[in-house]
Image (cartoon, rainbow, N blue to C red):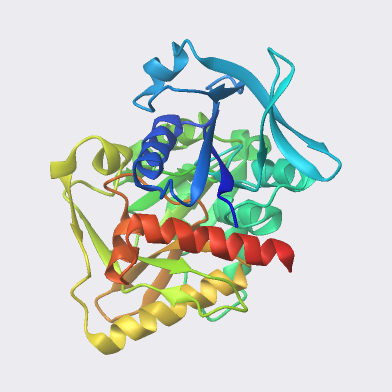
Length: 354
């Protein structure tokens, strides 16, 4: 069997564009090129799609000014999918599978998955429905609330209800402190921890800058933990031991994740009793299955002083940067990033055939 042709799709219109570039760069540097031919498709911040040839993935500026970028798209001809150069009207390559690595809106929310499904190109990661569910924190919590899994108390508002939001009523219901978040965004963008009543309105306005729906959650005095999951319903699913995030600021912010490595400690594996670890892994897997996740995901949770475990959210396209929790947790399970990529390809192709 010859090499598989993989299309790595990264960038995108979301606020997590630079994170996606860092994730893609790490994949490029670790993929086994004796097994795969790798093709790059970068989507810029305006949504324009480009084939990148002979241009190293370094940063947004270099990609934006790359002389070898060509406008491209995907086309299906006689049930074969190709990356197509729109400038020269020529086929670049036939493709076997896509690896979408666009974090956040347009990449992680089902839109990209819908496009790849339409052109009939197999891809790594959850399909349209679970991607859309997990991207929306409100829908996630609405579904999880129907199970035995614990979640923080919450309320939510759409842009149509914005004028009727009453700060006093929110505080009376949830108490302080609380978190205000965009409903469908990742990497802690747009999130504010509110400690005082007069900070709430500003936090709400800030969150609405990033989304048309916001969620407000009761703060839980707990440790922040994450598990990595790999596999599907019919396979032997790997659930990693949990890692712990110890933020030196109020919470695990965007800056803490990607800008200032001294502001957060990642404890891998987390220092938790073995019996509690097994309970954490059970909750993570239950949430993964409840929300119909496929191939892989990172499950974010809290554990309080009484060992109550709460689901925070699930990321269906977690970061793959050098400092990202998902690949580091999978390394605990004996999977290097190169072998992890192999497993992801294997699961995705098997799922597409079924």
